[in-house]
Length: 292
Image 1: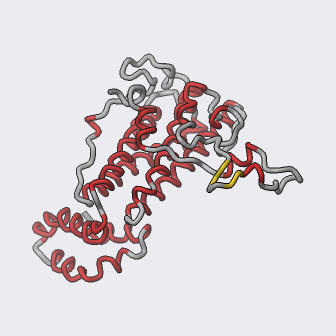
Image 2: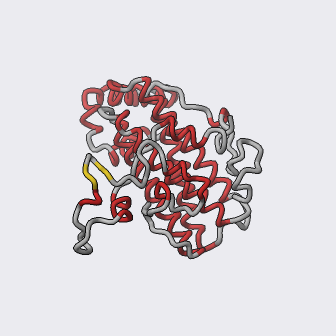
Image 3: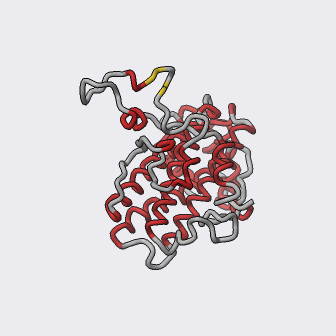
């Protein structure tokens, strides 16, 4: 374990990290001056302690629960893309770079969240405790997406649903992480999930000529533009994706920059994404994709 390399990586996403740990630099130096075997053995403990002191002041059981919720979703996505990439002949050669990059991102999200939970004094939910059925059949393997790993069109449609749901899930937890440094990392992941969603839409449009935008916008039920009514609920919720009132302002009453008329529903819904609560996300996934 290269301790200083870890510090450098942390500083890339948290420039204030050195300021946070400044009073403890001497302790770090003392640790690394031990004999090599002792130093190596002490590193995991030292790293965990360092994270707790730098970020742990506001870490609570609630924050750990949010991180484990996020980790569960990342396990789902990581396992999905691992299975897709591992299925011979499923992903066309021209799309392999996109899908492979998304797979790597999801795998890295899992690793990061596991480390963040442990460093914050929590216990990461074990992947072995979860069972996934990507057909949506709650373990029976014959759900509505039974051909998910034999039909690339189905694979992309399910991927789009997962990514859109993931974006909404991270957004829904932002308030629960307010005041905690973990929020920065959650927002980092949230942004990447949104890029994934746009990439999957691009692949659907480019490979199968599906009429779809890189962002969520539509006048259909709940702005579900996947073309699959079975996932309407993923775009619904207390504040559905077809919401046109934001911050108490009815966007449809605002003048359009494209014409003299008022803002259209499609433009209004494209301008804002809406959150899903943890309860809403789990209600969508448990009993279908996450086996009970």
